[in-house]
Image (cartoon, rainbow, N blue to C red; front, side, top):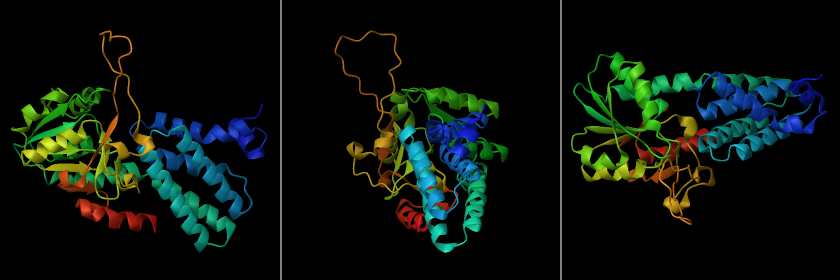
Length: 321
């Protein structure tokens, strides 16, 4: 019996072809739970390139675009996936114009895609090295829920023998703060879990806020877990710096004007976790993400360097051109 890959290569099963890239993506995420979603998507597209039986640049380009659309349509709530795919597609388009030989073109794309596979670790290391110098002995830090980048920053600071205190928000509705507490405990960092509604109460004692991002948008603002915006406003009101840790493949060419202008990929409701029964007909508004404008962000720690929010647009131009 033919495997899924055989079906793809022989074009005998259109349904398997259509979903193979998604199966690859799921497999990569399962094998490496810490891999960034955007990088996992690029790796899946690269594996599709390896399997491709296309004989011309146009055919190969068509296959890449179809696989990219399949990923984005299937995981349409993952804005970081969309960012990574767009950057990879842009690279394909640019390479397509620069390299006329088909075999050289295909090999170049595969090589480039494989290099992307190393980006998660490399990017987080660069970010951690930059951000660690902003953490001093005795500081009290506030983080919002679970962020792999923020965890890497704190781990690097602890490895430098810095002593600091971390307050972690519960981060409802998904409660990712509990996972962040476990992640920090694994590397010997003591954390204090607080309710989301206790942020303003706690902010007086905080020296700095560090958050991750699901997307960094054109004006230097961020889209992140719900609650980030209100944390940023409280920090701003009390003159506490808010820093963002984010990989450059999360830079996205969107420009939200307000909370009603978020891209479709970020608009979703997460089930409310409660044992209480609500009256029939009750409407529950439980969004997963919000938008934090750039005026509330002091600096962004990225693998491209330490950026002010105003510098993001220039970096986006470089990434996509």
